[in-house]
Amino acid sequence: MKVRCNKLRFNTRYLSLFSIILSLLSFQVNASLLISPTRVSFDSRERNKEIIVVNTSDEVRSYALTWDEKKQNERGLYEDLDKDEANVFNTASPYLRFSPRRITLSPGESQRVKLLLRRKANMPTEEFHSHLKFTLIPTSVTAPSDSEQEGISIRMNFFLNYAIPIIIKNHRNTPEVNLLSATYIREASGESFGNVELKLENLNQTSSHGNFTVYFKPQGGSEFEPVGYDNAVNIFHEIDTMTRSIPLVKPVTTPNGRFKLVFEGKEEYTNKLKSEFFWDI
Image (cartoon, rainbow, N blue to C red; front, side, top):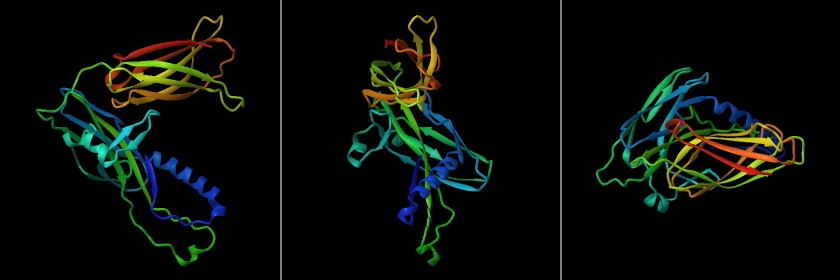
């Protein structure tokens, strides 16, 4: 989700207050639109999919639907494609149609968005992906009043974006993820239990989706216990390696022991993809 401010006026001495307000608004924004599923994948035989969107706010909301072309970097984050990259990247949007292109929802109302895949005869047997973006249409835009010129003045017209990946697969390859390295980083303060830094390898340039769970067994212990989670992770076909930092939710109580990392596939990979890795400290 992106938050872009159209107009912003404030005195610098109120910057901290503005940051607090912005964080509160972002929390509310995250709860104003429910999208299901948050990831759509077409296999080699599928042609039609549906997305359900629900307005969970207490106001009437309108959204414009457009394509957004992005690539994934090695940190798992999304970056916009420039024009040159878009010409050679395997974008899914040229093969897809969706309707409607604009939706207006009353509080609690839902809407189905239909996706239609139109494969071409000479379409490569590879993977393609684009993001479908839902942009909130502002109800009105007003100019700042004269009284807002002095003191604190915050006037924000938010253009709120929700984007979900749409994937086309023209093969039946099973993804395979390998662990290249893993490091446990202890935290000196008592506010954190530390984290595990991972470097992962995408072996066959096939996208995967699933949950990572970190387990730990102290030296001399008999059972592994879960200590960290990283859920709903996308690994797209264009990256060879990815780094992840998984914060631990439980303390590692002994200086020595064994970690176990489990990656389990979700959605179309449920019960089809599972990898386990071990390392000692």
